[in-house]
Length: 212
Image (cartoon, rainbow, N blue to C red):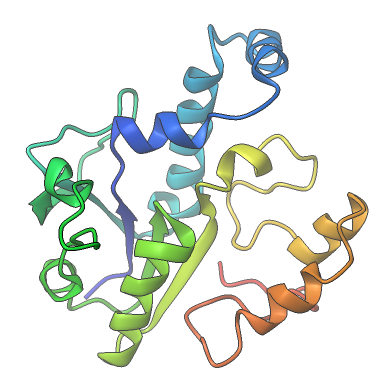
Protein backbone atom coordinates (compact mmCIF):
# COMPACT_ATOMS: atom_id res chain seq x y z
CA UNK A 1 0.00 0.00 0.00
CA UNK A 2 0.99 3.65 -0.28
CA UNK A 3 -0.04 7.06 0.97
CA UNK A 4 -2.42 8.93 -1.32
CA UNK A 5 -3.56 12.48 -1.96
CA UNK A 6 -7.10 12.68 -3.33
CA UNK A 7 -7.83 16.04 -4.96
CA UNK A 8 -11.57 16.42 -5.49
CA UNK A 9 -13.18 18.04 -8.50
CA UNK A 10 -10.16 19.71 -10.05
CA UNK A 11 -12.20 21.16 -12.91
CA UNK A 12 -12.13 24.52 -14.65
CA UNK A 13 -15.45 25.72 -13.19
CA UNK A 14 -14.30 25.33 -9.59
CA UNK A 15 -10.82 26.69 -10.14
CA UNK A 16 -12.27 29.78 -11.81
CA UNK A 17 -14.94 30.23 -9.13
CA UNK A 18 -12.36 30.04 -6.33
CA UNK A 19 -10.58 33.03 -7.84
CA UNK A 20 -13.59 35.34 -7.95
CA UNK A 21 -13.92 38.21 -5.53
CA UNK A 22 -12.59 41.66 -4.78
CA UNK A 23 -9.11 42.87 -5.64
CA UNK A 24 -9.06 41.59 -9.22
CA UNK A 25 -6.75 44.39 -10.39
CA UNK A 26 -4.38 43.85 -7.47
CA UNK A 27 -4.31 40.12 -8.13
CA UNK A 28 -3.32 40.73 -11.75
CA UNK A 29 -0.57 43.05 -10.54
CA UNK A 30 0.69 40.39 -8.13
CA UNK A 31 0.73 37.85 -10.95
CA UNK A 32 2.58 40.20 -13.29
CA UNK A 33 5.15 40.98 -10.61
CA UNK A 34 5.94 37.26 -10.46
CA UNK A 35 6.19 36.81 -14.21
CA UNK A 36 2.72 35.38 -14.85
CA UNK A 37 0.20 36.71 -17.35
CA UNK A 38 -2.76 36.53 -14.98
CA UNK A 39 -3.86 35.39 -11.55
CA UNK A 40 -5.21 32.03 -12.74
CA UNK A 41 -1.85 31.11 -14.25
CA UNK A 42 -0.09 32.06 -11.02
CA UNK A 43 -2.62 30.17 -8.89
CA UNK A 44 -2.39 26.93 -10.88
CA UNK A 45 1.39 27.12 -10.94
CA UNK A 46 1.52 27.50 -7.15
CA UNK A 47 -0.99 24.67 -6.70
CA UNK A 48 1.15 22.41 -8.89
CA UNK A 49 4.16 23.30 -6.76
CA UNK A 50 2.34 22.57 -3.50
CA UNK A 51 1.06 19.19 -4.69
CA UNK A 52 4.50 18.23 -5.95
CA UNK A 53 6.53 19.34 -2.92
CA UNK A 54 4.01 18.42 -0.25
CA UNK A 55 2.89 15.06 -1.62
CA UNK A 56 4.62 13.62 -4.71
CA UNK A 57 8.01 14.52 -3.24
CA UNK A 58 7.14 12.58 -0.11
CA UNK A 59 6.06 9.40 -1.84
CA UNK A 60 2.32 10.02 -2.06
CA UNK A 61 0.35 8.78 -5.04
CA UNK A 62 -1.76 11.63 -6.41
CA UNK A 63 -5.34 10.94 -7.49
CA UNK A 64 -7.44 13.61 -9.22
CA UNK A 65 -11.20 13.09 -9.07
CA UNK A 66 -13.40 14.72 -11.69
CA UNK A 67 -16.99 14.71 -12.80
CA UNK A 68 -17.82 12.28 -15.59
CA UNK A 69 -17.00 13.68 -19.03
CA UNK A 70 -14.94 16.58 -17.66
CA UNK A 71 -11.31 17.46 -18.24
CA UNK A 72 -8.94 18.56 -15.50
CA UNK A 73 -8.51 22.30 -15.05
CA UNK A 74 -6.13 23.89 -17.53
CA UNK A 75 -2.50 23.90 -16.45
CA UNK A 76 -2.91 21.33 -13.70
CA UNK A 77 0.03 18.94 -13.89
CA UNK A 78 -0.65 15.27 -14.41
CA UNK A 79 2.63 13.45 -13.87
CA UNK A 80 3.79 9.85 -14.23
CA UNK A 81 2.24 7.80 -11.45
CA UNK A 82 -0.76 10.11 -11.00
CA UNK A 83 -4.24 8.83 -11.73
CA UNK A 84 -7.56 10.39 -12.70
CA UNK A 85 -10.89 8.93 -11.62
CA UNK A 86 -14.48 9.71 -12.52
CA UNK A 87 -16.90 10.10 -9.61
CA UNK A 88 -19.99 8.51 -11.15
CA UNK A 89 -21.88 11.75 -11.80
CA UNK A 90 -21.62 14.49 -14.40
CA UNK A 91 -21.35 18.16 -13.55
CA UNK A 92 -24.67 19.14 -15.10
CA UNK A 93 -26.59 16.66 -12.95
CA UNK A 94 -24.65 17.74 -9.86
CA UNK A 95 -25.58 21.38 -10.40
CA UNK A 96 -29.23 20.76 -11.34
CA UNK A 97 -31.61 20.85 -8.42
CA UNK A 98 -34.12 18.02 -8.11
CA UNK A 99 -36.89 17.94 -5.52
CA UNK A 100 -35.17 20.77 -3.66
CA UNK A 101 -31.77 19.05 -3.49
CA UNK A 102 -28.60 18.78 -5.56
CA UNK A 103 -27.40 15.24 -6.27
CA UNK A 104 -23.88 14.37 -5.05
CA UNK A 105 -21.46 11.67 -6.14
CA UNK A 106 -21.51 8.64 -3.87
CA UNK A 107 -18.62 8.71 -1.42
CA UNK A 108 -18.53 4.92 -1.45
CA UNK A 109 -17.98 4.92 -5.23
CA UNK A 110 -15.09 7.38 -4.92
CA UNK A 111 -13.45 5.76 -1.92
CA UNK A 112 -13.36 2.27 -3.40
CA UNK A 113 -11.20 3.68 -6.22
CA UNK A 114 -8.47 4.92 -3.85
CA UNK A 115 -8.29 2.24 -1.16
CA UNK A 116 -6.46 0.36 0.14
CA UNK A 117 -4.04 3.04 1.31
CA UNK A 118 -1.88 3.59 4.39
CA UNK A 119 -2.83 7.26 4.72
CA UNK A 120 -5.34 9.30 2.75
CA UNK A 121 -5.24 13.08 2.47
CA UNK A 122 -8.28 14.76 0.91
CA UNK A 123 -8.18 18.25 -0.63
CA UNK A 124 -9.83 20.21 -3.43
CA UNK A 125 -13.36 21.55 -3.68
CA UNK A 126 -14.99 22.34 -1.36
CA UNK A 127 -13.55 22.18 2.14
CA UNK A 128 -16.75 22.21 4.18
CA UNK A 129 -18.82 20.30 1.68
CA UNK A 130 -17.58 17.45 -0.52
CA UNK A 131 -14.06 17.31 0.94
CA UNK A 132 -15.13 17.15 4.58
CA UNK A 133 -18.00 14.75 3.83
CA UNK A 134 -15.78 12.30 1.99
CA UNK A 135 -13.13 12.45 4.72
CA UNK A 136 -15.78 11.76 7.36
CA UNK A 137 -17.07 8.80 5.34
CA UNK A 138 -13.54 7.42 4.94
CA UNK A 139 -12.86 7.79 8.67
CA UNK A 140 -16.00 5.83 9.50
CA UNK A 141 -14.77 3.10 7.17
CA UNK A 142 -11.56 2.84 9.17
CA UNK A 143 -9.28 4.80 6.83
CA UNK A 144 -6.47 6.94 8.30
CA UNK A 145 -7.61 10.19 6.69
CA UNK A 146 -6.95 13.92 7.03
CA UNK A 147 -8.18 17.00 5.17
CA UNK A 148 -5.51 19.36 3.85
CA UNK A 149 -7.45 22.59 4.15
CA UNK A 150 -4.56 24.58 2.66
CA UNK A 151 -5.20 22.97 -0.72
CA UNK A 152 -8.90 23.71 -0.95
CA UNK A 153 -10.70 26.85 -2.11
CA UNK A 154 -8.74 28.63 0.67
CA UNK A 155 -5.47 28.20 -1.25
CA UNK A 156 -5.68 31.51 -3.21
CA UNK A 157 -5.83 33.38 0.12
CA UNK A 158 -2.87 31.52 1.61
CA UNK A 159 -0.07 30.85 -0.84
CA UNK A 160 1.24 34.43 -1.06
CA UNK A 161 1.48 34.75 2.73
CA UNK A 162 5.03 34.91 4.10
CA UNK A 163 4.35 32.03 6.50
CA UNK A 164 3.02 29.67 3.83
CA UNK A 165 5.20 26.57 3.45
CA UNK A 166 4.73 24.57 0.28
CA UNK A 167 6.19 21.28 1.45
CA UNK A 168 4.55 20.97 4.86
CA UNK A 169 1.04 20.54 6.20
CA UNK A 170 -0.39 22.47 7.86
CA UNK A 171 1.66 25.36 6.56
CA UNK A 172 0.69 27.90 9.21
CA UNK A 173 -1.28 28.39 12.40
CA UNK A 174 -4.66 29.49 11.06
CA UNK A 175 -5.82 30.88 14.39
CA UNK A 176 -2.72 33.10 14.52
CA UNK A 177 -3.43 34.05 10.90
CA UNK A 178 -6.92 35.25 11.83
CA UNK A 179 -5.65 37.09 14.92
CA UNK A 180 -2.98 38.95 12.94
CA UNK A 181 -5.68 40.25 10.61
CA UNK A 182 -7.97 41.49 13.34
CA UNK A 183 -10.40 38.61 12.94
CA UNK A 184 -10.34 37.42 16.52
CA UNK A 185 -13.91 37.76 17.79
CA UNK A 186 -15.66 34.41 17.74
CA UNK A 187 -13.61 33.01 14.86
CA UNK A 188 -11.00 31.00 16.83
CA UNK A 189 -13.73 29.55 19.03
CA UNK A 190 -15.81 28.62 16.00
CA UNK A 191 -12.71 27.24 14.29
CA UNK A 192 -11.98 24.96 17.26
CA UNK A 193 -15.62 23.97 17.81
CA UNK A 194 -15.99 22.96 14.16
CA UNK A 195 -13.27 20.36 14.72
CA UNK A 196 -14.75 18.75 17.80
CA UNK A 197 -14.99 14.97 17.40
CA UNK A 198 -13.70 15.24 13.82
CA UNK A 199 -10.25 13.63 13.79
CA UNK A 200 -10.08 13.95 9.99
CA UNK A 201 -9.64 17.72 10.52
CA UNK A 202 -6.36 19.10 11.86
CA UNK A 203 -6.66 19.75 15.59
CA UNK A 204 -3.19 20.86 16.63
CA UNK A 205 -3.12 24.50 15.53
CA UNK A 206 -2.36 25.63 19.09
CA UNK A 207 0.89 23.69 18.88
CA UNK A 208 3.58 23.42 16.24
CA UNK A 209 2.83 19.84 15.34
CA UNK A 210 2.91 18.88 11.69
CA UNK A 211 1.28 16.08 9.74
CA UNK A 212 3.87 16.18 6.97
